[in-house]
Length: 246
Image 1 (cartoon, rainbow, N blue to C red):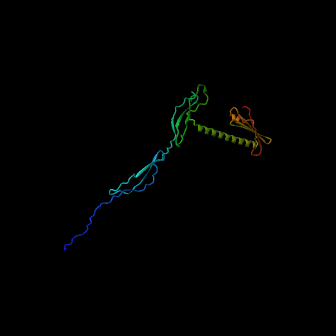
Image 2 (cartoon, one colour):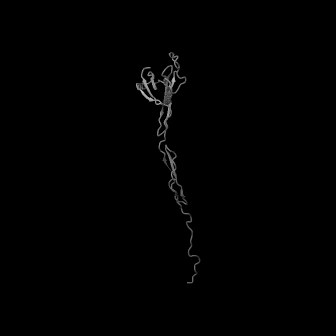
Image 3 (cartoon, rainbow, N blue to C red):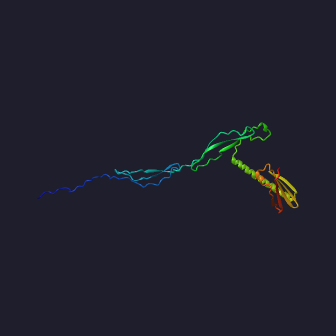
C-alpha cells in the first residue's frame, strides 16, 4: 500500500448568521388615571404607559396606544340666576301733589344649584311732585325721587314701634315715681294713650284714655278691661281703660 498520508485538518468550522436576533417591543404596566380636567360640564382623564423594551433588529413593534383618555366630570355646572333688563316705568298714579310709579324686571332662574338673584324685582318711585292748585299749604311730596325697598320699609316700621314702646315705658316709670314720692296728680300723653295717675289715701289710681279715632281696630277691641298691679313699694295700683270716644 505505501501511499502518502493526507495533509491538513479533517474538519473545518465557518461562522454563519452572525447578525443580531430580532427583539420584540414590550409594554410597561399602565399608570394611574390623572385628575379630571373639569369638575363639571364634561372633562377628560388620561393615563400613560411606557415601553419597557424597545423593538430591535427587526423585532415586532408594541401594539396599542401609549396614552388613553376617558370622559369625566359630566355633571352639569351650576348656572346662577340673571336679571333681565328693567321694564319701562308705569304711569304715575297722580298728576300732581305726589304720586307713585314703579317698574319691574324679570329674571332667568338659576339651575343645578346656582345662586339666586339678589336685589328687588320691583321698585317704587315718587312722581308728579308739583303741588295741585287746591293743595297749597299742604306738605309737599319728597323733593327727590325715592326708591321704596319693601324690606327697608318694614324695618323702619318695626324700629319706630320699638322706640315708641320704649318711650312709653320710660314715661310711665317717671309717672309712678312722681306719685310714689308724694305728688297728688300726674297727667301725661304717650302716643295715642293718655295716662292720669292720682294718689288718694295711700292708694295709687292709674287711668288711661285711648284716642279711638286714631287707634286701630285691634286696640279698640281691648277696651273695657281693668288691670291691677303693684308698685315697687307694695302699694296696689288700679288701672281702668275708658272706651269713650275722643
